[in-house]
Amino acid sequence: MENTGAQAQPGRSGREVIVVGGSAAGLFTATSVARGGRRVRVLESKPQFEPASRTLIVTDHFRHQMGASARESIINEIRRFELFTDGRSAQVALIKPDLIIERSRLIPALAREAQQAGATLSFDTRFLGIGPNARGLRLEVESGGKHEELHADSVVGADGAASRVARASGWPPIETVPLVQAIVRLPKDCPPDTTRVWFVPDETPYFYWLIPESAERKEASGTARMARRAHSCLSRLGAGTATNW
Ligand SMILES: Cc1cc2nc3c(=O)[nH]c(=O)nc-3n(C[C@H](O)[C@H](O)[C@H](O)COP(=O)(O)OP(=O)(O)OC[C@H]3O[C@@H](n4cnc5c(N)ncnc54)[C@H](O)[C@@H]3O)c2cc1C
Image (cartoon, rainbow, N blue to C red):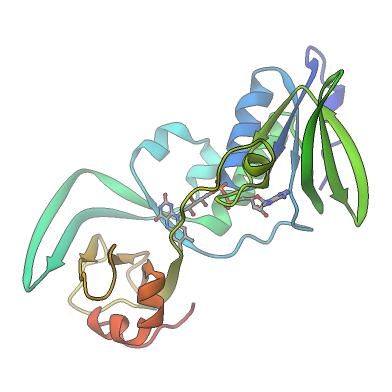
């Protein structure tokens, strides 16, 4: 997808910002920077937009921060948390509901907003390395199977937790935690506006939770340790078998 209209916009600064990574962080950044009057190009290594279906839970702040089309990715609201550990439980009512976002709707909506703001999106373009040059920064990329050099005044690394931009710029790798998410049927005793969270130190040092995304089904996610014990965890959730991983 190439937005050829972007560079023709009058009043846009000649200084180019390159954003590496065309997902939530990169597309949101591209929109903000393009609205500020800079030329923006987003490089995405994937050949096209196929964001995997996955739900995220975010705070109410999302409503005020995002544009109208991104807000259409909201599929449910959570008003209460139920916490379980060691045979005990507690309930926490939220003053403002948390929001359940469908990522496969959010990412295309953010892409549309970025393009409307004047950003160019280049798919099948993988960032390889970066260095200084007389004009600012020189980027090595692989685009459509060919090596290319690009030049930019500023580069934003939005290429995920294992960011190659960060590594190439000298930042140490950050610690990450593998996560697994499954779609399961909504247990009959669980209201669709309530998230359940289990703290079970014998199974995971973190937690796992059950987040309703609609009246019919829920998302369950946890750490890699949970993945290894997925079946026992899912039966603990009272949800039966995962319908989708
Ligand atoms: C199972 C699961 C559940 C989660 N649940 C929640 C939740 O409930 N709430 C929440 O807030 N967060 C949640 N998260 C975390 C959230 O999904 C991430 O923090 C968020 O998606 C990160 O977005 P991002 O844009 O920074 O990076 P990413 O989504 O990782 O995107 C990085 C992009 O960069 C591209 N890229 C990578 N390398 C290159 C390269 N060399 N050149 C060009 N492009 C490149 C990738 O193709 C990708 O499109 C969850 C994560 C997982 C895995």
